[in-house]
Length: 155
Length: 448
Image 1 (cartoon, each protein chain N blue to C red):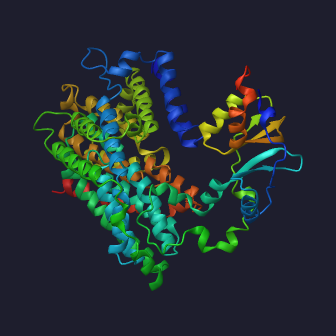
Image 2 (cartoon, rainbow over the protein chains, first blue to last red):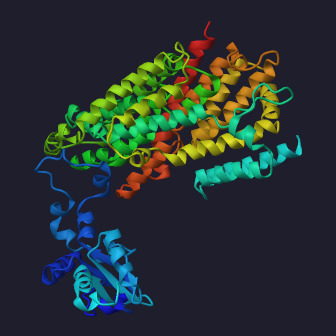
Image 3 (cartoon, rainbow over the protein chains, first blue to last red):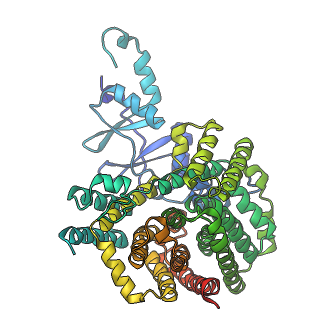
């Protein structure tokens, strides 16, 4: 069994020039935590998820401090202070440019391993760099517990 | 010069050019240089790794100085443990609040806090933890953090000058020349204090010219609660006690005949025992690239000594200075500042220790061992090397590992600290502190 067998082919994607607030709207609409970023030729060029947007709000130096418990309640961190502007930041400036992805013929076991190793909720599936589907955690769970799998075929 | 000498000199020169141009990471460059020296056998592995002492017909070779290596590793372990408790953040916020939010006050107190911490703990660790909080404080005040960061790192290098363990060049000099912790406190600590006061004086001029902060911004800063910065009070107490014990033991290491590295390792081992953290995680705080950089340098310098290059250069140096101690002291002071700024003070001191050791041996062929290094006319020269290279590390962005580390944090935080911007502060301040150092050494050793 390979990634192709369990992936969903209807993938919600975003483009590098889309604003971050559009991504947030899509998250709310579909309930997904991350979306692949593709170019005109459907090549996966990045991924944008909740983590990347939170990083945007929390500046690098704040992450490097180690802890921020000393900040007062009233402290407004980046995102909240410039709420209107931050929503307009293009995806290109926020996305992870080195996304975890798998080839369509990759064994499902490897897809599962990557999902656990990188602690991500979904993995884009590509054929020669072009997006053909996406495997989410629920796709994997379904594959694992699906009865047809129990007899004979292995992950 | 022998063929081996020529080969060793060429490898050495190429490696240092590589360091200065930054085309390859300096640790890669010196490890390559050192390994090539071993491969072409301009120095044998035993001499490079273990040194050569008192063999007739062969110069004394230091080799890899394990006292330096273990002292650094142990102190980095202690510093990174202290770092994980939130103590550095506490100091930074406390300093800013004590200053009541005035920009000059903040710079002055941050400089004092950083200098004191840097005297007892590794500089790079100190500034890497002080820098992000400094940026946060500046953002609360809506002021440009880059000058603050530059003053923090300058004060770290000046504070590190004060003690044997404060700055890697001092560790290397102290270990090579067998100068004690107390020797450094007597000679280097006063000039470090003078340098710090002068630095704060410059900050006064600067802050007076460029900065104003509104009451609202000050209020925002005063709301920071530094007591909540301490994430692990138990570990903090343990590490402060062990740090004080370690520093106290350093003060008497000469009396109890223990090498500084033994004391530092004892402190580090005890602190490791007293904390829950995983060993791998604790060792993560050690700057291994600096450690291997120094190891590579030791191997290369061993080759230069073994092939007689250092001996030859010592004669040249002696002819130039005619054994005039004042001339030697002042030229070493100035040369140290210039070259440390160009290639970094660690790379400079690794070579310079051997060169000055060779010079002393040339002047006093009748003596051997530590006695050669401790002849009275060499003492001001060693201190000139220490003061010159530590202060000289402030001249450019490349002068010390601490400078490079802070520049990295600034860059990632979108406040680029460019080479030129650093130079505008670093160069004049280095010039000032070197002049002060020269006057200081003159008063100490040459005034009649």
